[in-house]
Amino acid sequence: MNIQKLMKEAQRAQRKMAEAQERLAEMTVEGSAGAGMVTAVAKGDGTITSVRIDRSVVDPEDVEMLEDLVTAAVAEAQRRAKELQEQELGSLMGGMAGLGGLF
Image (cartoon, rainbow, N blue to C red; front, side):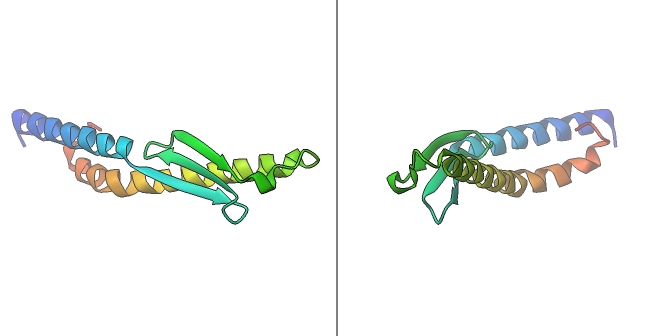
């Protein structure tokens, strides 16, 4: 493979990667805990954009439970975002393996 062809392939791969990342930035996923009492929303890149908490789980006497529910919902949203990333970017990364380790 000549260097010009290799560079064109690398540029095309970078373009596709940027397009996939733009799509991910527009996608959202949700994670929830406590049977949906706490829900976290994340962008496709894993950034948490919001957390919703049902009033019924707000107990001033048991703040630790609420903290645990929020933590679990955020973790679930981030796990789902990672799965989304793998779906969107996985095929691109596999295709880049033939570019001589440039990526």
